[in-house]
Image 1 (cartoon, rainbow, N blue to C red):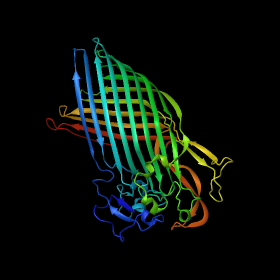
Image 2: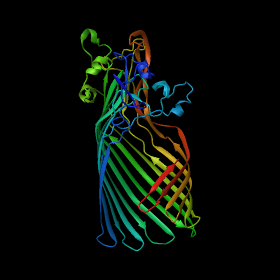
Image 3: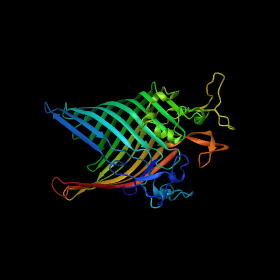
Image 4: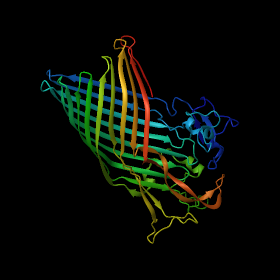
Length: 487
């Protein structure tokens, strides 16, 4: 079994006398010693293989009516990204576990050890339209429309060499179709009061199939043939010139979101501990815990939903709503410098998660318990849906133009206070009993507790973010531009 590391130079297999990784020293499940193969950056995680095109047109049949339309096509055929360790943060851990613990001396934040190659295949086609009608000297009607189709598949090594469960995840195929409509009515005059109001609607449908594989435990497949998101909003904002240099802005927005899943289900392929492969030649649904058998499987073995058994049905519908505001004050210090301050609230709707079922086990033997009809007894049903996220943000900043308008500078201090911030990561859904094995994979006769790990989105109780952002945009010569930022 080859393990790839990307912080070493590309080329040859790493010699046995070089520093070993966590996976090499904890490979009781491997039939032979694990060799490290140096990564080729051309096709490894983090590479770039993207292309795109854009075509736009503007039609103005009259002085008061215009139509701007844009078509875009985008493709990404790279290896995709992968989660790495923040080595500076890891060095602060009290237990002493850091980057070098997993990847050996000299490991940095770009180090991973994987045995699943990254693969990403995304195709996106989109169309955007803007129609504007200035039907009077002081009023305009605007209609914005968008339509997009995305096809996606990907494969990623989840554990990156940081645990023994040998985890990977794949979206085998996915199609997202979305469209949006926005109607605006806004002022266009030069009076002290400028305003805008509007209606917004968005809908997205998703047809998705994929699986999560923990090669030493089980495989889970999910089907979402009809997951729908609908969002609607009404909004308005007005800015009033208190003086020639001071402007007050007040705005509000009411949003309703609904998400539903019809016909979705989870399927499971677990190791059958009652099967004795050496005696019967049968491997059950999940033979991946046997290295020789795993290597004999086809690359897309676990992408075949027919090998799985349906465990849950995820038909569900949930809705959220929020009223949000914005209050701001701008001060024109000079013709080239503006100071501003504002406070605003924001909202991100909750989400639907898959249903996870834990079955009862005998704590003395780890055997599953069955009812009189031969079905596993359910211990708990875990709903992995999550709540909405809300935030209130305060900002103080300045914007300025110097060098005869060729250099734009922006500086902003911000403080955001979140309620129920949404955080996504692999996490333990529940713990189950299992027969303990020693470092060589032999049964010890003891029963231990192991985590059932899935990818979860959770709500943090409270969180705060404070920071400073600096940006510049410089045109040093005609048709030339240099820009950048620091946070």
